Image 1 (cartoon, rainbow, N blue to C red):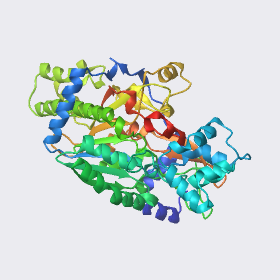
Image 2 (cartoon, rainbow, N blue to C red):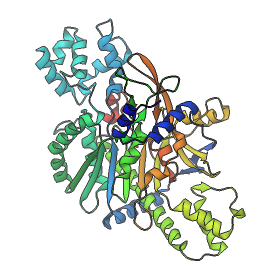
Image 3 (tube, rainbow, N blue to C red):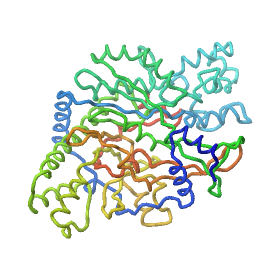
Image 4 (cartoon, one colour):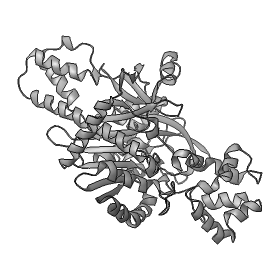
Length: 502
């Protein structure tokens, strides 16, 4: 099935022939649905800390930073913003010339409220010889939308979200990338230095670097810190082969194999390369203006404090487990472990087996995930899920991992009280200070197959286990209820008109 030319192409990407064979097999077999015990809820897998506990967590986080630990803010920022502008692309291509849908009417009625208004007005002046107001007055709405989207204008239809102007300030508008730099200074700076890492696409990396060179010094002066800003690209070795509907390799017109990015789960490799004790992970578009940042900062400190408190306890137990412990001491540690993972028959294990089990389940990366009350946003949620070894643990699941034909599971999914906003803080070193090899903790059976097309031909695409679900399946997980005000994603351009982004 694979020619010598194919094998050369595969090797150039840093992928083994065995990996390709496994991927083609996965197209044939598909991925198993997960077995669920319940949707997580407050009191059942989700913590809702009291005011006293919140204050203690913030205090402990501040103490931890003072000790000089290396803290990194990790921001997946490679996604293009094209989906944000789906409605406006449709308007430009429509067979009518004036705003007709509610979305189009809203966009043009409130166009002056966008942070990119002045920049758009300037490119309209340059390209059309008229500003936005004049173009709208003469009914030339499409010229305005086209200048926002097209390459000769702002090129927003092709740029990554991190490079769009989101928020207005007296000193000038800011991009999401800049808002993340500000957040890094406010809760992730340790000993006067903020480490911020962006994963970006190859085509945009120089653009990101230029924006950092332009803006970072100003923020460093404003917050009295130094920045260490780094970038990485998704590795070619994490790309996956595309397949035809009959599960044979999909080929380009020239006969070469087609590879596609493996989804955000590929970023576990980028995360694995980060040198850090603690890593914050948050999506590029979930940012707010400075006036709303205090709530975000407070809750980031709370979940980080909870993480380091839990890590301290776990490290203490792991050191104890290096010695000889009687059954009573082992049972005490097992009782603590029940907060994160349930094993149905520990009593059947011998002392030696129980000790080995406890070490295995405690000596893992740790993550605290903020979850918000479910308000109908699409996406994953927190669940108690069965693992392949028979244990039950806390997991973030996407809809693709759930059997839609199972009425009980669908009820759990649709009636779940909480939602995953991608608000994580992670501990990625062991109790001896050595980094974990994060790919070792991925559940490889949690990938996803989707239908796509290329050049008018149908194809199957394979996505790797997602970054915060399957890629972190074997981590110690804690869910914490955080306020809805900390979750303000921008999925469409009109979301920027919401009060939270003004």
